[in-house]
Image (tube, rainbow, N blue to C red; front, side, top):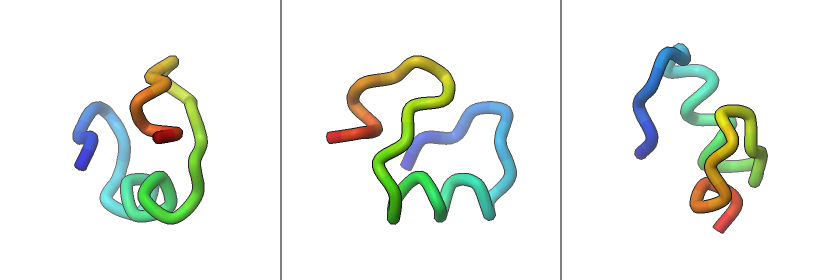
Length: 29
């Protein structure tokens, strides 16, 4: 799980949807 300056809600969305906000291509993987 990627924990940066985002809410837990945003983290759950990141896990469900491959989105790169912080510029981390590993999230989309």
